[in-house]
Length: 164
Ligand code: PNS
Image 1 (tube, rainbow, N blue to C red):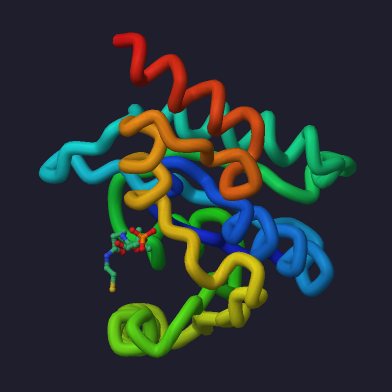
Image 2: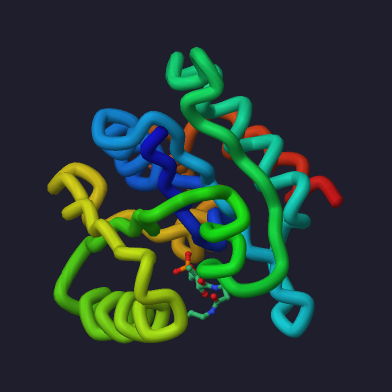
């Protein structure tokens, strides 16, 4: 079985991330979306909240059949998670040249730590290239409309956050 891990903050998941998940399911039998929880960094939403939103969005998009897409929260190195899950690939999305340096560096560091793993990068579609989770959070917190940028489940989570 071809398994890939797609790590990220996903705070919240955007339609750009969803597009990468969908395209990755065309290449891999199973895609594990891994919500990275970093105890040294504060995040707007807990790991579990982000996982729940991803699972709901994956269901709404009809990508949940036959366990093709899983979502988990994890703390630690992506390469350790990938090995434990039996994955040979890490999936990432690349929006613009500004993403390139850090993605190249991460893929090379991951390859150095785990030469048996490779990173597969999906070029973001033009319709999603300008999306970022942090701007979505800012727009939502200032009362802007983020429909068309994130899945419905993420909109509901952002609304709940505003009411806290
Ligand atoms: O969505 P992001 O914030 O761009 O994702 C970055 C992420 C989570 C993929 C990266 O920080 C990561 O892999 N963190 C897990 C810890 C790790 O493996 N660090 C070494 C990376 S070379």
